[in-house]
Image 1 (cartoon, helix red, strand yellow):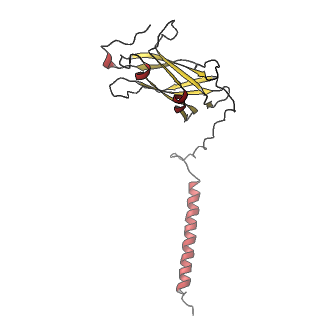
Image 2 (cartoon, rainbow, N blue to C red):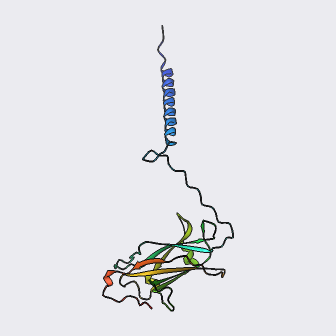
Image 3 (cartoon, rainbow, N blue to C red):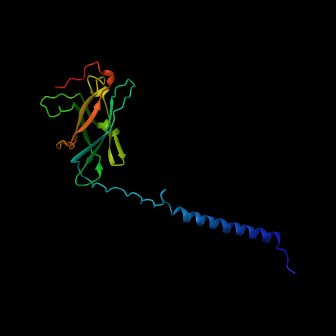
Length: 205
């Protein structure tokens, strides 16, 4: 005649059974998390690798700009007044950008005026020292500078002028006195507002 298991044995069996079930569920869950895929069933791409490091002591010999597509209107008067520019210094042939002590000098010209003798810019900015240090950033492209250029500060005529096409120039002046570095190509930016259609634009010389 068989005996009913005691309450203690039943309790132990239930506890052990639950432990086995939990372990099995955790194991299955672990298997599922390793099979992560995209919505169309393809496996996820590998994790991105850190970009190559620039050797210690490398010096900048190239600069590239990424101006924002559209200037911002920071004071809400309908006239764009802030240009946002990401600037990157490179020590070619190394592919990763770097930070270096020096000064960024920007100037904004009417389109087609840059190469003219005695052409005067609409606005000018010089960013250096602590101001440049505050612009240091690490973006998707690597180490760079996120630099705000305000027409309220850099333009004698402010920001209130009709819609115009402009060209932004830049040069980087290394702090050790090496030759200034300029980017390849030109950067076109549209400024102004139709609200100023009846007013005069900054003079092109």
